[in-house]
Length: 489
Image 1: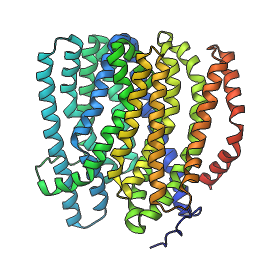
Image 2 (image 1 turned 135 degrees about the horizontal axis):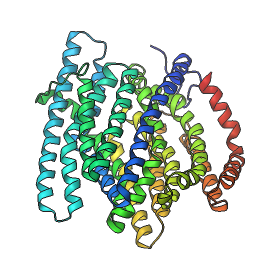
Image 3 (image 1 turned 180 degrees about the vertical axis):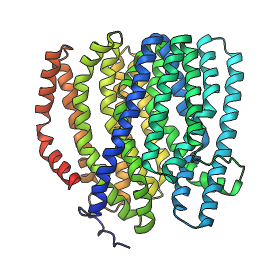
């Protein structure tokens, strides 16, 4: 067992070989995840074109509802993830424990999602709004299948290889794109819902070659999973509400058409938040394993040096550059969604904050401090809701609502990182927090300034804006170059 670094010092040389392998793994999975997100982006753009803003708002309502449906499982998949990691590589008894935990998780999630599907069907018969009834029926058709697919994803990532996991994600995204686009072209919004369910069912069939589907009602292993999962689920509920509260406000005050524009902005910028999930997927076995073998302090210090700080210093500046190019791209490809360009810019930039939240929460769970997450996410949610309602009630543009969402994510990221630094026993947590947040704040300010001074959407204005942004980014240049060399070393 390696001796942890001294308290108050984050080791600059911890696990150099693992850090090199980490860059290769992140690069490989990033390429695969880029294909996945690209396919989902194509799906969104095709559906936005085929359905139009109002019906696309109905699709956005379904996707929002599906995000909340996963939380009804009370975080059982997070407990399953940890339990499968704990028994990885053990004897036959360990394998039996893993199967018992997985069976309990699957049995529980089937019960919960089945109850939700029945409730949605009954509700669809009682409501008078045709589109709401259609969304409820689409939810009922898809919720069980999507939850079973989520179970298969967890099993695949922990019990097989990252390569197979990446292939499964790409396969699912391709099926989603083909089925939803084809069925939506034939039958409109109901066809898109049918395509969603068919794609999930097909993806599940693909995984039967290696995933064990043996649902069972086992109270003892289920209790173990929920002890880990429930605090995380509460935090995930509040975090999901934090990332979607602005959309509910837009839907409630502006209707499905305005939500269609706003959801399009979010879907265009969806790739921004996915890179942090790439890094999390690659590093979570290392972080959990290190916390178990070397202790939480060493694991958190290593996680900051190996993943959080490189992400914080290198990724937000790239998002700022993309935000300068986004408006002209939308004007060229899908001009009828041009009102979505200003909020889409901020959604891109908020991907940096959301990424810090994702990576920071991983360290928090590894340190066993997940019970602190609900308080943090709940506070950020209240700020987001208050600012979003204030913006839209006063007739502000969609960009102001997106700014409210960005503010909430930034507060959430700062609080989680502060908790990580405190648990890692560093001497000056405020200094490390500044190191993590300064590139995001600087890049956001520079991108917004360029957007105000050079709002043109023609290619010349786009090129000039990108050049101006790079010039404003110059003070961050030396730090970015050093960090890149550190990551590659």
